Image (cartoon, rainbow, N blue to C red; front, side, top):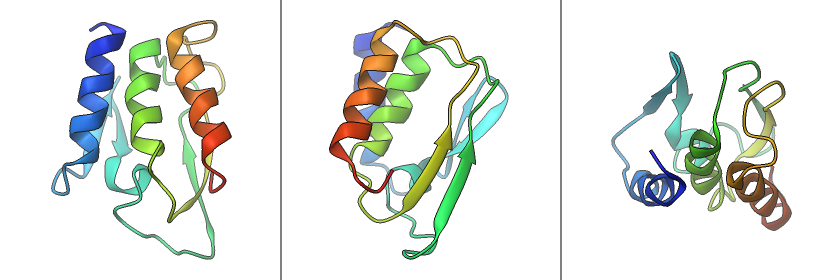
Length: 103
């Protein structure tokens, strides 16, 4: 999958209220928590560990797109030791973090 398709998939997943998880490299990512449709606890921090999952640039573009509209959950996301440094996926993540104070 290329980066442009990852953006389209991320946008389509944002609009989906039924799909609960996205499987990337045998790890299930909680879509509704990332995009803010499922409120865990508005006053507490939700920790999502994405470290050492061999995530690629396209994976991070999809995840960052889901995170971009999340204004309801306070999230702590660990993305260390993955394969997306110096890529467009890293740029998407940085942009999302700069524009979203809840993460």
